[in-house]
Image (cartoon, rainbow, N blue to C red; front, top):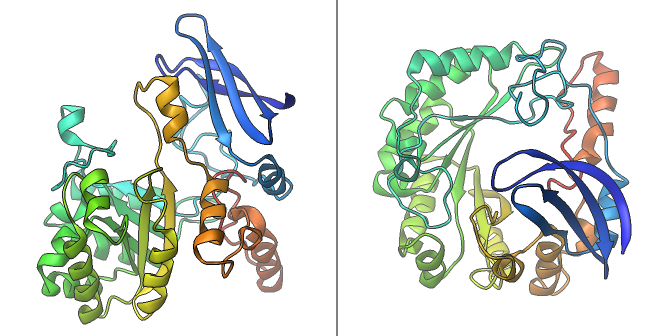
Length: 346
């Protein structure tokens, strides 16, 4: 066992802040911690130590905000909002406009039925959030995602999009399961006219069984119809968002990439999110289901027969020098993507 560093984590049961250790064992990276009340926990963090260290070398801590929105009182993670300890600009602001949904996905953690209450800020409250984000100093937020729940459930979503554009957001996207988009090409046209830049479309695979397992219902035709309606409406910037579940759709990454390439007139990107295991699963089950970023990169290389290699992926902060260079040339500060180096690879 090779100790990498000490850090802080939380107990998954009571959320108390704990001392934690990140360590390497058998070329895998783990995090371990112990709660006096709930015992010892150990989780696989990254399945490839070499890739973990490659990402770590490209770490870049940002400067945060000059005008943080909350004070540090209890420390991370209790003072989020953005507090003085936050080290990044807002690269993509996400506003949950509802926790209601027209699906009941087994993997979802933003669910009104499970929460036992409805969260749905008013138009005025959302407008206040937008103004708050645009007031960020030194770099106002310029990119926004309306999320949920399912944001298209709100009948005033078009108004919210228009308001976001009005206050200065250049990029406005919606995070959607595509159900409503599949039902009406006219609705897709309304979204485009309001100023939607990108449709961030839940898309887990290319066979019905994948959707039955991950979403509890066959949604394949719904996804295809949503994509076609976006095409007809002139919404030509779709991101396919894959919830990656080991044993369910991890064998379809290559096919999804090929599908995106065949529909490049509307599909601009694929965003793969390994499923987060947040429930009270036994350790053995968590270990069986865990899939991490290096697993994803390896599977992509295998399933594309080397057309996309593991070495093609880099952590998000890799682009920070580009932001700094452009800022120096134009004498202006731009958003710097100083996300945690192990948050994702692109």
